[in-house]
Length: 111
Image (tube, rainbow, N blue to C red):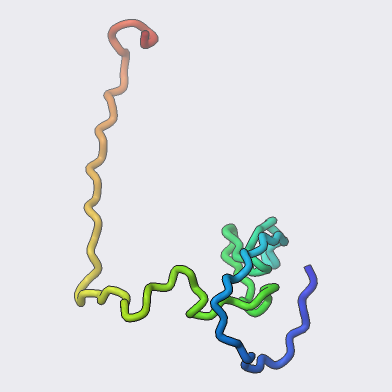
């Protein structure tokens, strides 16, 4: 994989557009740290083996703006407020007792 040259990042003039963004392209490469074969979207990668992540600026296309995000909540709606205090802990399941070891009674194999 060859690196693209990067110049100074100047703010781009972005016309207000409601046109949908093209779907992301599935790209593949080797992890630069451990060599694992990985896949990513538009040249942005994260290795699940060693944790290496490439910089977002190395992608093939620009990232969508906030107003272009299809998962963005509607205007006026905010993220739910987090309550103060310690995080809620999940209940720990009780261990399942193991069957006793030793000779079993009955047929040698289940029917």
